[in-house]
Image (cartoon, rainbow, N blue to C red; front, side):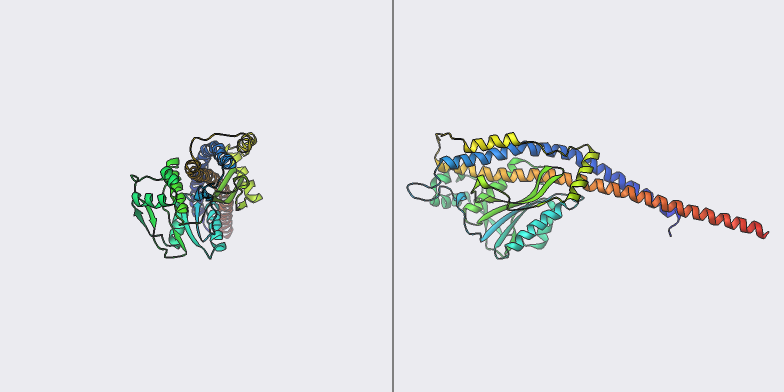
Length: 377
């Protein structure tokens, strides 16, 4: 058994760890409040963007009456031979099973679609490090803007005028695949400084790859945040853009009751609300916009409007997923650090009890030695 000095050193060490975990919990709680406000503020915009697209599709014929072709390639579902999945994980650890649950959902997606070519677009350092260790990086090269413009103009001149320019910067061009699963993106520090223009570049690249036929579908897996005790890992399809009025996640994993209880206790001790904001009024208003019996006169051609709105819709979905994932990561870290703090307190109590027993045993042994020595004299 350890002596009193060793136990005292161990108790001091655990107390120092408890101070660190308690500080990390309060920092995560402060960041969570800001991230939660940001996520709630962006949700109506994402819902209204979907309603705008839905309203436009109701009032505009998606097919060109002269040619019979679909006005925009993003509306055309294809057989999923080449699939892109955007994996939104965290930048840091100490968040419990947050990153593990995200990567598990991604690996499950890979297992179910093992006969297809899959491109991985990891967001967050944890996903980036994991997938770069397991899968090779895709080979790409820069394509001059004038070549891209001519290639697009041969397919749809109206769409080209809205989406491309001969004076633009060179864009990426995918070379031949070297493996069925490849990592196509590298976005370090994106979540730590999340801005819409940076996400817009990713969205524009994904849209262009779909239009070029490089991918046949695009999915995003992330942690959907409703409140501290209401989160789920979601797999959502973002391309092609079809059936927006019936858009539901492909798959999701809910929090267990034990996880909800722990998260509620951590939020209560940190002063964070566990109530899910009531967005019923905003949801009903968005639905009314998409289904209102009103006719509009559009100045732009249908192809120009779709070329402008559909890429913005994809970018909005990605941005909304990343914002919610950031809030969910802070909530997971707050819960994990609260559990670590409580475990440290329990360990200190246990070590203190052991130390007192060892000290009492030493005192008793010394007293017996003194009494025995006096009796012998």
